[in-house]
Image (cartoon, rainbow, N blue to C red; front, side):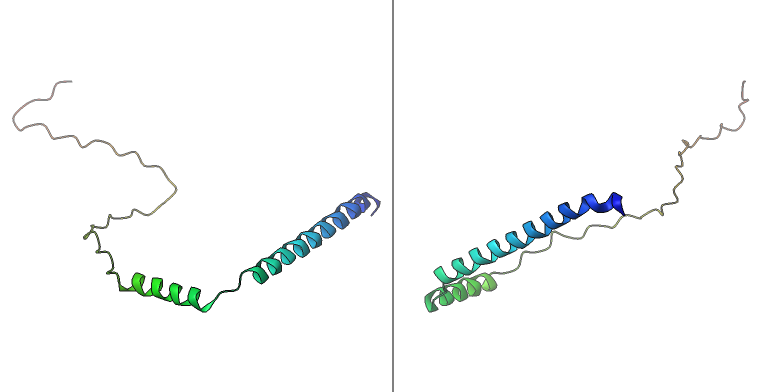
Length: 95
């Protein structure tokens, strides 16, 4: 228990700093809200902008893209070997 006592001042300082930051941020938001209250003209203008944006036609899709076959992940790396063509008939293989 004595080993963890050094955490107490750090925890207290953290809680005090968080409380102060929350209080200061809230106070600034309240002051900013009091300075700028939306008016009826702002509301009408924003509705007009929304109406213009909704009236625009939607962009067309680019066209059909064929989906690629997804190979299952097995976790094993497989090295593909090149396909060898069979020797023509009638010829002897040397080697």
